[in-house]
Amino acid sequence: MQQPVEFILTDGYPQDTAFLQSLQQTVCFSGHRSDAFSQETLLGFPMVDILKTLLAGCIELALQDGFRYFLDGLAEGVDLWAAEYLCYRKQYGDLPMHLIAVEPCLHYLENRRSGKDEMMQYVKQTDALVTIPMQGKYSFLRRNDYMIAHSSRLICMICKSEGGTAYTLKQAIKKRKEIHCMNVGSPDLLFQFATQFWAEEQDMPHTAAERYAYYQQYSDTLSVCRTLLKSYAGW
Image (spheres, rainbow, N blue to C red):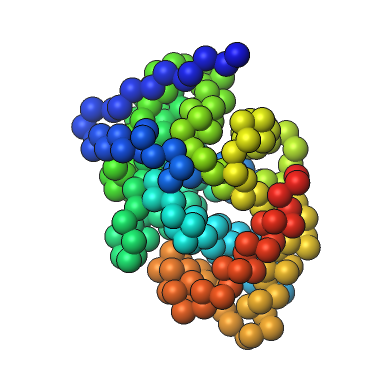
């Protein structure tokens, strides 16, 4: 039986621990780095804008379903995409919500060689910074274990069946968590999503502000997101 993952609340940051007693209202994220995804366009839309808009839709669905706490692992790619949208939504949105950053190891942020400024921009807006007090190659997996243990839903964007994201998805399945999985390795999912914009001659949102404004105006698109997630839940 796997032992609970130890953690500390990092000094110098807010230490709102309400999420520890709010499992049924807590979501976590997993996904690859940016370079794992296609850099091409689809129906004339940049792939990164499609992915970020679909991810924002999943966050909106979580809020619609009553989730209010969001655990973010601070990895480049999907984690930072989620943090970008969550920070905007937290500042300008109409619902109370909380962002919890989870460092995979001691001194992770201060020792970053790339992406540090972007990460710190989001960390400054968190309600707590949790650190897994260990070092070594397994610390990232323990970080993922921690987030799964303290969440009831996983929002996952995946395109390959190996690596940390695949591990996290398997753990979520094993722990019987609710899973909103986007298998973006399947062109059908992204094509169906992008078709909604192409058919209505709408631009794909490019910024967090544009994504928020889009879902406020076109909330019906969330039902499309939910249908696509159900279709690919069996990754």
